[in-house]
Image 1 (cartoon, rainbow, N blue to C red):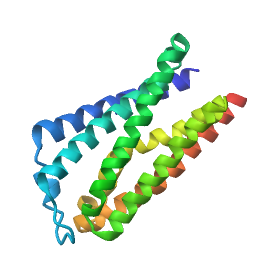
Image 2: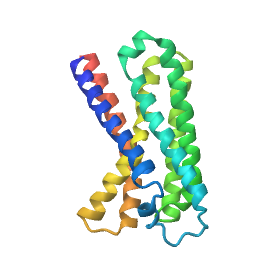
Image 3: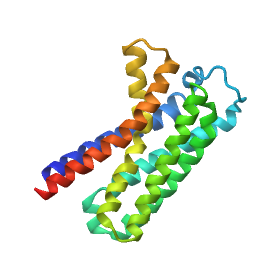
Image 4: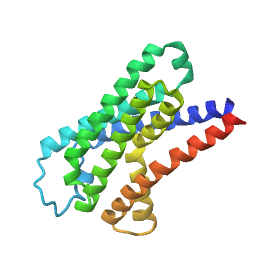
Length: 211
């Protein structure tokens, strides 16, 4: 029990800090995303900057809402206190994920790294949507344990952006790869880790529960 509380507290700290960082970075410090856009060279489609920026603002806003909603719904205290709030908040998460995926789909053709990165983002969006819908189907069938496990898998994808930038920074600044190559590695590396890590966590929690 203490272990789960510690993990939740750690998750809450990381989530809150990243939400604050994303909001400040994208809405206050660099609202025009000049630095990020400077790496988008050789685009085959003309980028309509005002539309792209508005999509990015919506993308960031609902990504933060999804992170916050998911965090609240993993709280056993809130779940035990109000099942109704848990259910409504779950739909907030679902709608937020859908809007994040939708806006990401618009921005994918303009992704840093060209077609291979664009394909990666489209694959990531499809995987995330399928996992999230699976979580919804499981709870509709009253399979609570399976629902929670699929929600763990889904929620992991809320940290896609953070993981991409951590990996790309490692390869770009640490190993000296070009930014575009590092970003591509960051994207595909993130997809693999976001599928593997939650599965390991679920198995570990399952064993600790059995013990």
